[in-house]
Length: 87
Image (cartoon, rainbow, N blue to C red; front, side):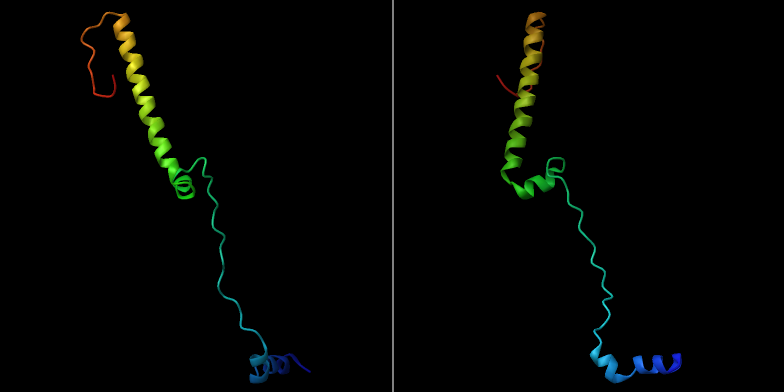
C-alpha cells in the first residue's frame, strides 16, 4: 500500500462517516477573580456587602469630621465649617 492509497482511503465516504468530526472550537478558561480585592465580584456573591461598605465609608467620614472638630475646639478655632456630616 502506498501513501496515495492511504490518503484516498482516509478520504473515502465510509471512513469519513465513521470518524468523529474535528473539534475546531477552543474553550478558554475564565479568569477567577478574588472577591476580597474586586468589589464587583464581592457584591455579586454577597449583595449586602455593598450596604456594609457604604456604612463603613460614612462612619469613616463622620469620625474624620469629629476628629477635625475636636482639634479645632482644642485650638479655639471658632470658624470651623460645619459640612452637615454629623453632630
